[in-house]
Length: 470
Image (cartoon, rainbow, N blue to C red; front, side, top):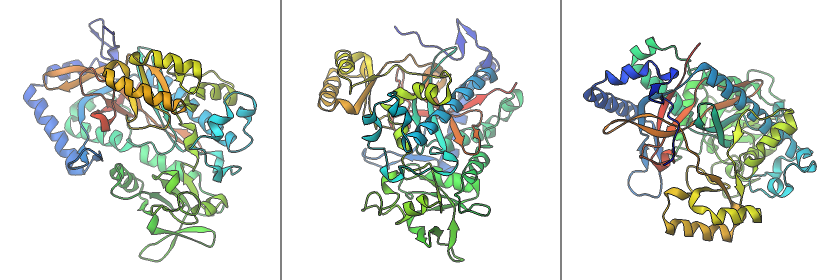
């Protein structure tokens, strides 16, 4: 049987970060807990916090399960994570600037050219272009897992449009509303500065031709998108417009926003749509979501796009294996946060090992996301394993594999009371004039007993994440 690190209990004793929560849970009668849980669900529903699951029939909009038991980090734990996250964000951006420029890391033989330049996320349309401040990925969501008191690993990097920050903010809001007393008793670092920090970051990368306070907007695919709630939520918090492609047009070397008072020049676009749909004149010609001519304006310095087109080549799961090398190559430092050991099926010897050990490994599609397109070997049937074996054999370049990590657990409210469930963490690192992240992040929890898959689309839930102040 695998021993999992329990973040609250160590050898039967409560660990320091959770010291004040043991009494809180013991003193909470089951009826009160059920009432509070129902209250939290009602608040989520009233506010409209849903995510979409397609292809399963019924109403695609689901309420994300919220667990009231917070996850807690000490200030010391957080400071180490913060240093590692900022280091990684700097290295990823240096890599992007390099591969769309001189490609020094490829020339030095540190990463295979094929992995970069034949990657489907590599956008030739921005080759040779330097975005404002040399930054490609402005919001980096780094998924972390914990396996011991001091052992943290990066599971993957999200350099394009990482979602979930609205849950981080709303989880805190709801916890403070339901349990004000516990916030009076614990000194918890606030996360509500995120929207101001995001706006600051976006404004700091205004384009060369912007000679005034930049006008910012969030570009959304529309209300059918699974993360639409978050798009509108962030626009409200930042006090910026939420726009769709049809609301924008290009004229005279600038992007303009249609308003009731006439056209208004737009300087910074926080885009929440994929590269392929941004501009039908440059990418997919059938896109109805983008803005014709947008890329010409971008390349001529008339508008900034955050995160930049082409940033996705840095969060490819095969490129991920080289991020520690990027830290050494660009920053001259040793990585503070470690990668999970990874086998690349594109390499014949590593593919052979993966195929021989499928029952013990986690296999992922290189471009997969949301918990889809993956195999968790120890939790899979023989049939599922054989199906994946055929897929890997047919297209080995499309897969990587990792060991099944002993993810840490935190206490979670379940039907019978409180039980340990596996968790991960996604902090949101903002990269602009400076690098900022609020103390906390989105903790995702696998609500099914024994499950290691935390994605909401796969039945996972969310928790409030506390960083204790000194």
